[in-house]
Length: 101
Ligand SMILES: N[C@@H](CCC(=O)N[C@@H](CS)C(=O)NCC(=O)O)C(=O)O
Image 1 (cartoon, rainbow, N blue to C red):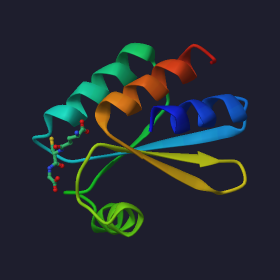
Image 2: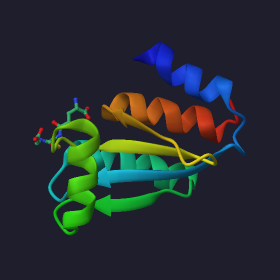
Image 3: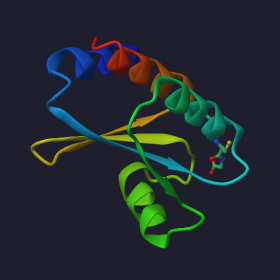
Image 4: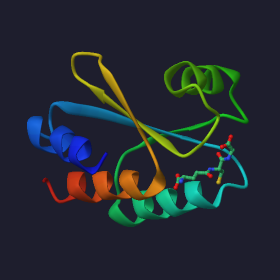
């Protein structure tokens, strides 16, 4: 998993990775951990709450087959999405993106 994250970071310039979406729900400590990092780094990330949006829930379920959050969706300029589960991996990705790496 770690290698694939770094592949994502390294194989695309940051301008090619054009949008990030974080799937979360209420009462999720792991989600809050990621949200705090996003806030701290000042990153622009769209938040989709799967308990508040049936559409968001369906998107997540379709992509991952599970309701587990947080999951980061990395959408590139070609319209392709990569889905990154695991709060620790998401935080590493966001920190690498923030540092331009
Ligand atoms: N190892 C995962 C744990 C994520 C996790 O346990 N999320 C909880 C909410 S805090 C969840 O979505 N549980 C419901 C489920 O897995 O269906 C991570 O670090 O992101």
